[in-house]
Image (cartoon, rainbow, N blue to C red; front, side, top):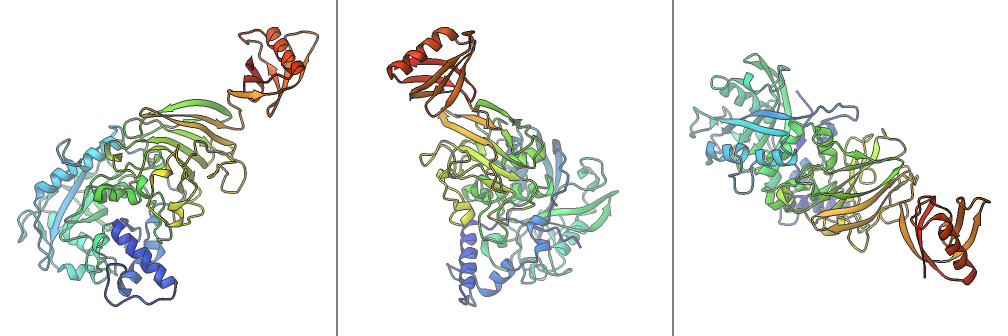
Length: 521
């Protein structure tokens, strides 16, 4: 059977209980036989915390896996299934609206979500199927829910697990569904099979008798000339955040970016593939990180290398404005992605807003090492709450915040590479300008043009030809007077000589090499 299982992050309340349970165990304290409002029971905690690594989310892709653009219209098939010991109460219409409607679902449908997140480059459509069961609009599984969950969230050994439930649901649907309609790219494989199982998800209850929402796979079954392999499963009361998160695994091949061993929070509430799937109680999930959108082919970041540029970033929810700042070379696997996260659209329930800097290392495959993530959020306040498990994101993560409007080798946090070397990346003068964020981006040690005020002129020098003149400015060093200077090289040089001779300070407009203008003070 397929071992590439990816589980949705737990709801925030359950996540806190898991973390507290882990802390109790690490401290040598016993967990109760029955769960409490603060911690899980020993059995549930053990099942969650000791899942074999091969079934954790980060095994979905390897570090060498190729990503293909996911664009255009993609059709999904949704099968509703309930049980003799857990009958369903929802209607097919509920799922058709929540998943595939446009502009009419109260908090936005899954289709609305992906249209917005992809800048209208991906349109997820689909049909909901369920018939012939004891509950109108639902297939009735041949076994009880308890049979499939088997006290392990549906993740136990086949056949008493979720994989068997999928096989049974597919068999029930085969007479009623043309599976060939759901091979979007002609590769002979159903691209997006969704199973909705009656009841509440284990990611909310923590109960081992409930199915935990996940992406997984079954041994290939050929129906209508196409193979059924991978699927995602969600509960009857699942919300858009859970659905969009699992579809991110299934269609886009994104890995989980929360920490699946619960020692940190990964990208937290800033990201669909982490705690952001639960923003607004799971009804209004956050956009995926810029890294996810890059891998899906939805954005083409502007790369800056050995250059300096002043930029204005429009809100990320509606504009694909992202800058890529590579470390060491233009094709480096370690780089920063810079965007403007505004509390608007599906991002309206972010923990804050402003410039978000993602530190990416494509040599990593997951976010389980809090000291070296695949995708890290550089948190403006320098507290590293996401990495230290203190919270799932706060308003001080985004720039400018906490009195910090710069990110460089000398700031906290700093822009050093993971090996500790100077990345030569600097993001300075980060400011809010209405809905936009403005900043100066510098990669490769190129010094930006800027005003330097109240500086002494330490020395001056010129050749026999007055068009070649220099000045040694306090804290800056030698700068050549630019020949295109609006005041002329000679006049500027004479003014600098006067300042030096009479001990007057100056304000100069200069970069790392040249002096462009000056004023006597």
